[in-house]
Image (cartoon, rainbow, N blue to C red):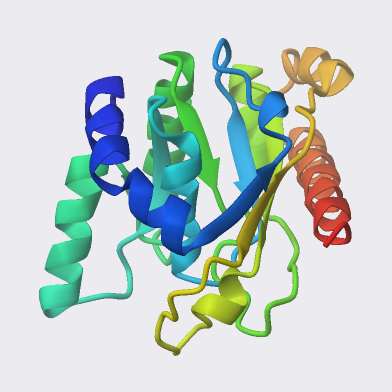
Amino acid sequence: MNRATSTISWILLGWFFRFFLVKEIIGKENFSKKKNYILVSNHTSHLDWMIGCYLCAPRKYTFIGQVDKMTGIRGLLRDLTYFWGSTIPVDRNNPESRKKAARMAIGFLRKGYNLFMFPEGTRARDGKLKMFKRGVGNLYLQTGVPILPVAMVGTYQIMPPGGKMKLSRSARIIIGKPREFTEELAAAKNMNSESEEYLRLCEKIAKSAQEEVRVLLAQD
């Protein structure tokens, strides 16, 4: 979302999340308004991306969202929501779509947008943190934008996969400290982005980001 759309969304819907879903946000001081970030979070519920919007607004931000599941009316509503929020569409089963989504994400980050993403790639249906995919490492190495770890706590209980949403002001957001990988960033400048060496750097960064989120979740 650009700043104007993000602000309008905040005014229209921010109160709902504040009074009916989100109990507290811990570590807000780590999410500086003067910088942009790659926000990485665990993902256990459809509610996560909505709360991610609540966290980012009224800043300018975007998401990477799947287009390979919902069809019919649900798919149409998703597409309208994506259009409103400048969400980056990706067909996770299509390699070219994944590459295009990465290029779009890099473009947004270079324009100063925050990018909120779920590096697990899909919801964890058992509520447990899964392995982060290396794409988050690639986005960092291509842009140098700091990675900001975020833990979503309680969203699985409010709206588990396959379940209905229960209005319960019990969700918590825990924001960690921004992470930068300066040595890896410097080394990557001399690498082919398709080389095994570069991909190992991406995996290293992804694993480190995953561990940061795991530590935040353990605070609950």
